[in-house]
Image (tube, rainbow, N blue to C red):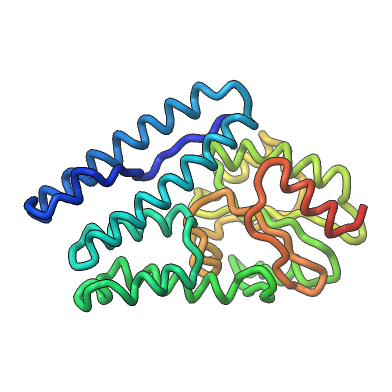
Length: 262
């Protein structure tokens, strides 16, 4: 399944004009975002293989990050900087320290913008649940996350939803890892978020999810872990330490194999 760009991406030119009003700049920003996303999706749809799509996507991400940083630099005293920062953060293209540094350079009135405050709150959450930190527990309908993780096994955790195409696209990769390694030292747990329980159950059955599940988690874990998009697939060690939270495709098998040592 080829990747697609569904969030705003942009070109700097029109927004940089100092003689243009902020509202006109915002309109230009939004128009350029749409144009960039359309162009990116055309490139991705024309990719001959998944590997080619991945390569194109990586280039697009880097270009996007630089464009957003350009917008921020040129608009530190108006709302466009917040819009650009929000886009970059939503794509997870900036490190936490870089984001905090950017926020510190914004105009005083923008640092208290609700979107900026949400970004800082999410940063705080991400830093508490980063690789190397112990998992944060939560409970859904009497079922605890800690019932499955931190129990002496490596656990691959998949935060997903039945309506999410990329989530369903990763199920075969997860199943391959489960079939190969499931046993005394490894297990898989699917956590359904932002979904109707009945849809989760039907989709899990349809796609052959036979491993442990937490259903109807909604925003509980995504708020706790700062997850903006799904699927979010992480590996948690036997002691409950988060080992990776950015796995997709072939990386799932690679990371699990490396940690299990076989």
